Length: 172
Image 1 (cartoon, rainbow, N blue to C red):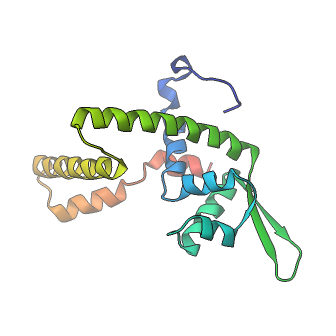
Image 2 (tube, rainbow, N blue to C red; image 1 turned 60 degrees about the vertical axis):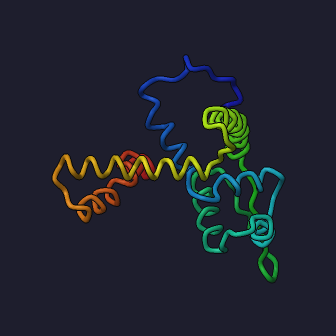
């Protein structure tokens, strides 16, 4: 992400782990909304809570802490009474907003294509519902194939929810 235009020739099978990690960073609810909000400039926590209706203070702080750990967001504390804290995007964070812009364009195209196929307006909620239904069908067939009870399957799902290569690369 150094400002260059990339093509599919830049992608290799060995890039999957890095791509999956990048998607995992963006996937927790509110992460992209926080990055978009900060793309307008430095903000205090209270301003972000106002700008992002529905997010809890706990979730906002967790997401901001993670984005700071990944060096996508800076946290600046001012020596005042009461203390004032502001967050802003780092250079890496600003580069990531260009990726979000490209994903927005692709997302709009995919929504349009999906609407054309189904003949009705579809959004992310529809895609999530379909994904859950497909996952339930897949889980049921795997359970049956392996002779597992639903309790065992639920434990396997929780155990494998986060691929291990995310955990290993996040701490290295």
